Length: 158
Image (cartoon, rainbow, N blue to C red; front, side, top):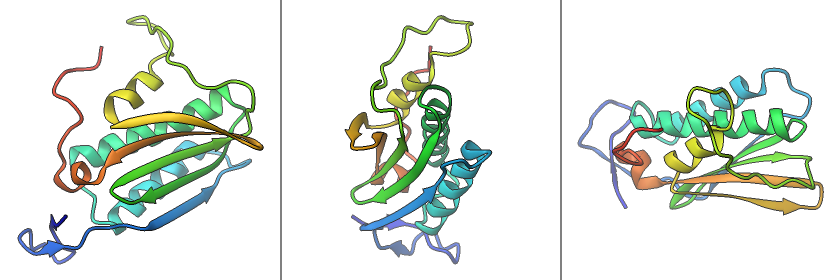
């Protein structure tokens, strides 16, 4: 896979694909974890050449939603992990061992209940995996979408 773009601004110069990198951000006890996670993700995506398109903004929104859900429903964020292969994998670790995330029926006009619907809509895949000390909620966005800016769908969120 070859993507278009470069740090010098030449849109026709091919850029080698980004693969095999992992970045971790410890968030246990950190105030402002959602903003810090977004900033961390924005910087990583810039380093990987995935910036200034709609899919990049979608990825940042997915990060925000996963971190917010961990903060509100799972006792806080432990760690944010970004892994690049054929896709960008976003994982948010928390210490909640008993409750796995489920999409709720969100009512139009009422706050809450929309986060996982947004994650589902903007990512190519998402899920959760239990581990010894809690769980990781993850989402993946295909690398070709991040390189081209191709949106997840053409419809609007309800």
